[in-house]
Image (cartoon, rainbow, N blue to C red; front, side, top):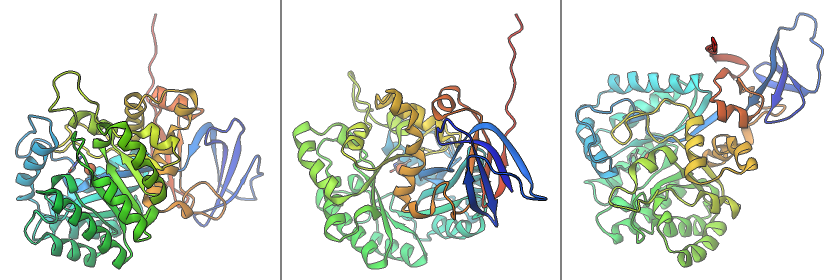
Length: 411
Ligand code: 17E
Ligand code: FE2
């Protein structure tokens, strides 16, 4: 099959993309159709590698208000609301919601999802269900699962064993939540345990790290030190790190050296953390987003995630990573021309590094023919006009299509 007239990744010149047996066969300025070859005219639209959701909680998706709404808008009330919902979790309930949510992502051009799944549940119901769905839904999206101890590892009954069980059942990544543990000692011990568990079992790491407006929350330095010492390096990701917003600059200067040496990845969730953070402030109110611009300037990998789709922590969410980038550029003050133009990387190539899939991701000869087509000429245009994803192609097959609406001015 030949996809003609694509503008690949902000290129100003057209390309044709030949796909054979589900793989990118040739990418050329101009290719003649072979006898009998099917052609699709992409009409000079923007083509990107598929969007990657590098941080979401699929087990909790689409549960906002059930059984109670989060009235304060804090992370901690969200955890209490979720704990009530967790009591009613069943396999069929999780299946139905995750199916709807992954399809919502598919409409928006997302083909890879890293989901945190709460394992502070003696039955591990959500984890077992997500592991089954990871296989069943692989034609829609590639799902990566983090064993996420929402209520702590040391501060939850049998927490360490639940983490070990989750890894034995097949979780791809090990999580932790140092800022939620009862004490600083527990916080450090939970991180030592989590990174050691990952190292012993050949898994990735993704820690909910310092998601609090407390400048004394310093799980990050422990994560980075262990990533370096255990040789895990870029297999490790620190998510949220919102306390870094509040760290003093002298400490950040010292920390940055370790962060670079450790080569860990960062995920920021700009929609959700501008909503959850600053809740104990009067005025001025902190934005509570990590130092994205400064990390990128130091050559450290950062991706952006949605975090929530209509759940106890966030009462909105539509599966559009464009909205995540749009918010992130505003709140991180990254509105220079190049910053806007290249910001799709936060939800494509940078997220691929976070998921540790870079070597099999991208629009390159020989790789799986996965790509999306946006109703725009480049990313700046797509972002500014909220252009729909016209088509999502996975393994050479179109798995989602959108027909844009039309509006007219009548005067
Ligand atoms: N759980 C958590 O600890 N932090 C979050 N941002 C979400 C769930 C969404
Ligand atoms: Fe999260």
